[in-house]
Length: 69
Image 1 (cartoon, one colour):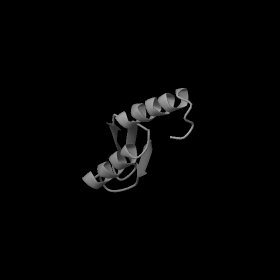
Image 2: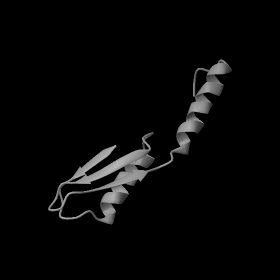
Image 3: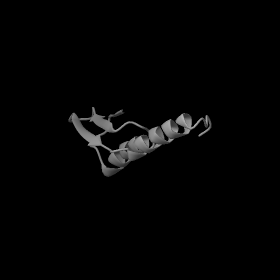
Image 4: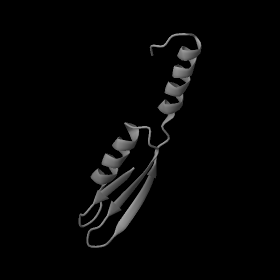
């Protein structure tokens, strides 16, 4: 995921926003790019363990003939 900003400098709220985006999606890597006075970037990784759980849940239900999750 790429989050673009054009602010004087990045602050903790910008980082928190990107981390929240990563937590609520299956995306695990995010880039925070700032095109303000001084270009800067930060890279974040969030290990989304829920993705593996939901994949396994779907496979187990499907194999057992249960098409509803």
